[in-house]
Image (spheres, protein in one colour):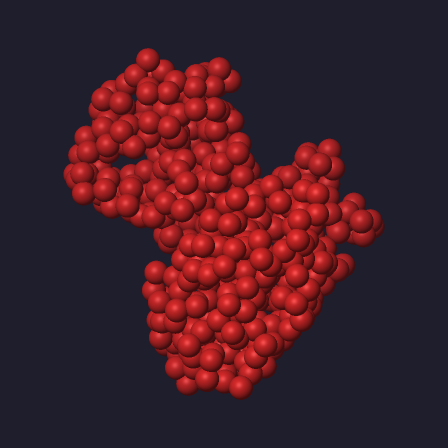
Length: 274
Length: 189
Ligand SMILES: C[S@@+](CC[C@H](N)C(=O)[O-])C[C@H]1O[C@@H](n2cnc3c(N)ncnc32)[C@H](O)[C@@H]1O
């Protein structure tokens, strides 16, 4: 057996240990990024080989927590990919308007920048009061940050720009207060937002959603887990509900492809048929 | 130095890259039969203009890599703006938006390291013009895995930093101008 195959076995055994011990299953995550993250953790823990993590993770919960933190490193931004927010306002908001109230699920919301971005646009469209928003992730640390609504101000200039490109009608500064080198979003933005733990690998559906956003999460999954997640979304969506994916993600080739129509191809917005 | 076993080529390029790729890719022959996977540093907001432009100049297909896509021979793939591009053991692409590496996403090191894991000694890595040192470590990894390492002649490069950084830490197999690189690649087929 060549060294490459042996290294594969080593990773498999590590992931199996984690699954049995902590009930977190990473076996269907895309391997190349997963390996990078394991490498990062090895470096931090001053270990050399993945197998050395096995006893540590089995007996020290703290090491597992660091593994989990490494696995859910969150890179996100306010109004990331502004065109896609613009497209939501253009194609999806007019449909939501017709409901007395509607439900939105942000799956894999990380530290929440995306959730506040959408809340701002909903507010400007006069729709925030009718919205019930569920923002979920499997990283509890990230959810805490999201709930506080406090973000570093370092990239604020870029955010102002992205807000405008997303179709923002006012000034972004209207929605936050400056605190030293951070910004804090107004509490009124989150009055209809619930932040909650949800693991896409093993937790169940959220019923009757009108819009689900899941961006830049499924690129980390293999096809099987992608299909599992797509099915979960399909079952969570109301008739004619919308699904918004990341700019490099698509429903094409997935098991639910036939049950959706493309609503905005370039911005990866899909709509459930029935 | 033999080339019979090379199965794939990876290349990293930054500042000056558009001109370099405009020079290199159109010289590849129509029968070129290996995949070339390229990280070109650019703004996260860039669209697919670059791949379309290069495609229009080239005899072989140039396109942006998509996640889960099987890697085809005789095709040039560019990493999409804003995402790291990685290769899986089953020779399909993966994307990630993890932190920047060497201040950049996509990063050449990320591509080269995952490619070296998959293609081992059957990989050829190339560093072209650009500032800073992204790709130097990745090229080193390719050499360590038994692959081949080529670098654009710093004299020939619009910005010599990336080639110089790579040469500094890795005994490369050859230092070539863009025209020589094109000839070298055509001879692989
Ligand atoms: C790169 S971030 C994307 C954040 C945001 N949606 C965006 O596009 O900017 C990926 C997020 O997916 C979350 N994630 C990964 N696997 C998950 C799972 N099994 N269940 C829930 N969330 C998951 C991570 O914790 C992380 O916050």
